[in-house]
Length: 313
Ligand SMILES: [Zn+2]
Ligand SMILES: [Zn+2]
Image (cartoon, rainbow, N blue to C red; front, top):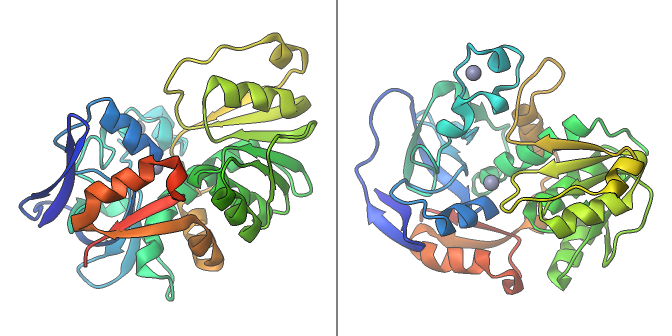
């Protein structure tokens, strides 16, 4: 089968044996490129088949989305439904620690399979994973209907955050840099702005840099909440504005399934219920054989790309 790997920052399309063993073999129909893939490739990730945002058909023909993180199932975190902080979550991540979905086929564990409702476009199921990422953060923020939120960063995570917040009755300003991002924000019902306003109940940092973190602190009201998505790829320092306003900073990584929320199930529901999100966010589709060009486009912020998907023709 065809698969996409990286070595010393260079993307290659390679021939691999179709995986065999315990689990379910998925014929991939949709696989997204994530900003974290670009960071990890730059940091030297090599050998493993790339891709953690994917889904496809099982051997029985059922369309499914795949949660790419595993869990030990027995530790204190797993028992509480917080498998995102199980030590196995990152160590079992498809596309980083195990072969991922940028391939014709991928072998996955049964408990990481989420059936899609009838009618969902097979070319879109790779969006369930980043939707689950933003739903986890929104669930952790405990934001209420009728609140005002600002999203800093209008890449795929920022725009998907805006879409889910609007679905929950929140008024959303989103800071955009490029015209195609503003257009996508408008399609999703958010207000694109070039600078954040002030006194938001909750700010969502979808960039995770010093600049975006400081902008969130400044834009959040006293006693408000700042939700931080993903990873700081460089360290960030805190300041007294955060202290004086008693802003609650909440980190958010992956997705969990505690008694209140099942982030991945909620993401499946959102994608099935709000298909306009697909058109607003997936800007480019490439064949697997054009993976090198797909990664180039995904890394170029001026290319008009929001989410780039690959599929096997
Ligand atoms: Zn991702
Ligand atoms: Zn565990």
